[in-house]
Length: 368
Ligand code: PMP
Image 1 (cartoon, rainbow, N blue to C red):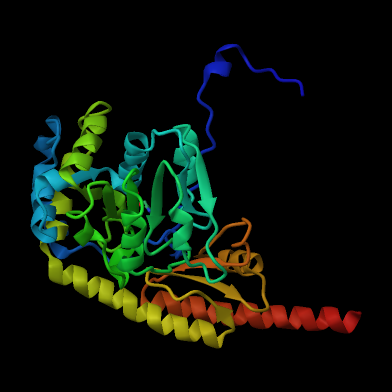
Image 2 (image 1 turned 180 degrees about the vertical axis):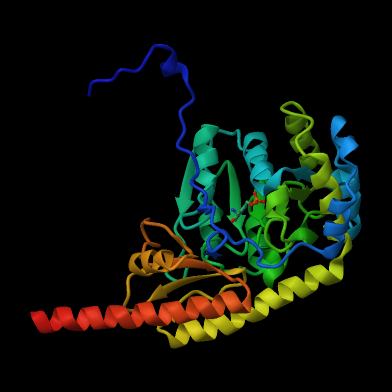
């Protein structure tokens, strides 16, 4: 192969970036492709945003994100030493990879999971092994009871939506006292159970959550980790060795407001869960199969029509869902749970697309 790489380019850290779901410019789109919340943030967030003193922007923000930290500590009943705040959980997770996965041994995560994990592992030159989920997309816990340099598992998993009981997660944590275990709980508020109660029991265990889904604040970029003071202390050292002022002042204030309104939060997630359960039934009636989801999305495959065809047809109709042309999951669509109205439009269109495909198939058969 002829290469025209310049001398300096040989010393560039080369990485293949993560590919996020599309953020279309048009507001006409029904956007069910990045697991955002279809409802607005809590009303208090709006009031606070409207009253934000813009002169404050002259000043650096609070490096400790104090107001937000206080609200989170009160809500989750933890101490400030057990909390780490970052700019979205992607920021928290990337920092955790860099801080904790330095043994040279492979980090373990499922083969079907959040596709940022292998990107961070490549970025930080961390060896990793993907452990195959079983045929029902469930975790095989014994796979995580071998020598490793760390473990990361989302619970519920993404993009499958499958939730594993806290007891299973605890077995994995308990079997790994020599490495750090991270449970990524980006979707835990939609009917799963948090492993938070285990942070007092295991020094080497970190729970990571986000404001991007259940708190309807993906645009603010707020994520956080909870763990033992020792673990959190190491994370903070790395963070403050990198950039002290990562979270901006509006995010700190608006994030805090969101946490203060527990009732609005509960109502929002309950609405999404109700819609999810209804859509599950209707998808089944249309011939879709899916693992049971405890997240704000459904990972569905049609028994006759290829996922890629449905994905493209939906896109033509301005309905965006997520599709990966990857082994094991290339016949699945990940559909974010939107409002009831959005899901009705989705279901109508799915019905049409499937009927259309059946007609196409029949005419192909009769041509034979
Ligand atoms: N973890 C999982 C499993 C996710 O699906 C996402 C959303 N892309 C994140 C973490 C990151 O979310 P955020 O950075 O918006 O907090």
